[in-house]
Image (cartoon, rainbow, N blue to C red):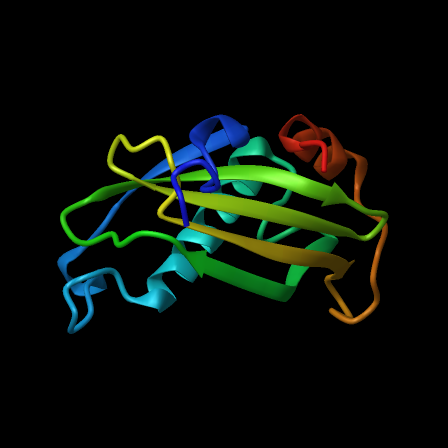
Length: 147
């Protein structure tokens, strides 16, 4: 993939630096594929918690991951510092598609890009899709990018 087609930092709206750890490397001396999903979960969860849109203990509505994916574009390895860029590609009635770019050190193009789709459900049943609370809509709207 050429540098031109890789996502750039400017394509994202919110950023979270995440240090890599020695144990993140695999036998090939680069970050193991499973760690990228941890990066994705960390940036989405931290954003939601710090925005006040979701409270892990008391929110009546919670997001469950129904789909996820990742494209690996360039290697990252310890001791790199990654920055996870976050944007919202789709804001539905009961779901949100979060997209994440993983940037190595100060690089402008992503080393990986991925997505999570959360469907928001009633905490009690964890099965009934529930309309997004207004506080959540207000929190993620600034992250929304045009398709």
